[in-house]
Image 1: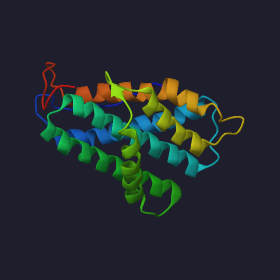
Image 2: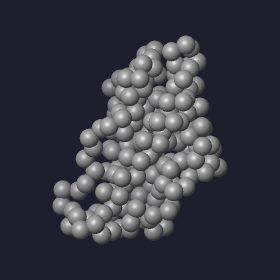
Image 3: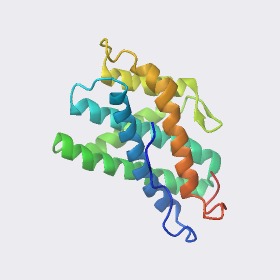
Image 4: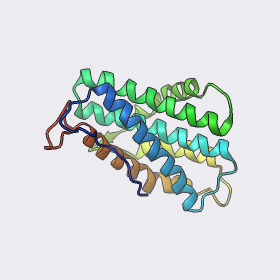
Length: 195
């Protein structure tokens, strides 16, 4: 799953705030989630309708916000993390809302996103995350949610394996790279901290 993502600032010499980095990473997360949803289709998994596709994108966004928080915990100063993560979550919620309204019609998708994020974070937070990658339990919990959305019919019953073994780790690696790019100046030095 390759996608070209703009994850560097135009003026790399200008230090960006943790909030701006969070907002920028929100767009990166949207691109990663959209690519992951498309990748499932390319791997011959079948979406029944747009509701299902949008739900998969939402789950990927939530997973990515959680992964970014775990990466930030290991790599950012606490004050930066306290600003960065909420800015990221809100940026993802806004992006999701805008696109869900276009596809599904009116609704309060932003509030639903935040509510689901908070619920998932309680469970995901109990799972291991080390050396920049989610552990088995976290990937399993995430892929369970994707499987529940996609169903267990003949075509989609292997989606859990795809998400756990390939797509889940891939999106986290791309996320970590983008976080590093956003938080690093052109000389390779840390701006707000190192990732």
